[in-house]
Image: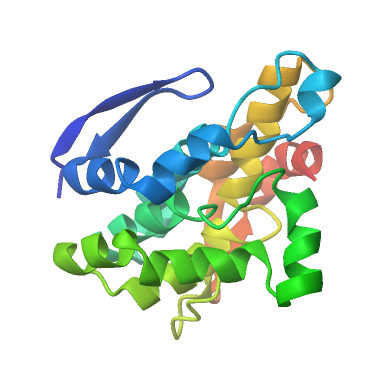
Length: 220
């Protein structure tokens, strides 16, 4: 069923990213807006002056790529509209648990709280205003929280987790091309859409068709 989009966001990497009313409401929440103040490559801007991109735009880009994966006929035939929407929303929220300086800060979380940013992500999705918004939209916050960190473990559909968290997930696909774009580094050029168009499901796991082997090797 065609989506009713609210509008679009102009992303420097992916172009126009169309969002639904529900996605807009989540984007406008405090936990998501907070990510505008967190640089994706904290500290790297002192070496790469253009690396001022944020976790916010990375999350929007990850949502966009997740949407493209579930639109792939190999995947869309296996998911319901609800699961497709859930994948986009979970991808959008997958990094809401990051703190200042991102992975550097995570060492303190592990040391002092024995938590990772993924633990904080799940907690924020369930316990902040995001949980209330998701519940009003008809989603189960706990389910979104699990999928956002790749731990939904839905029987027969491991690939749903793997879209967001795996060796070839959309999280990595976005940050590699985004970091390359903003830093100007020459070694991160990958054909993201070749990979996305070549994904399939083997058993219940995400796989890449052999015809896209060169794109996969470049990505790995």
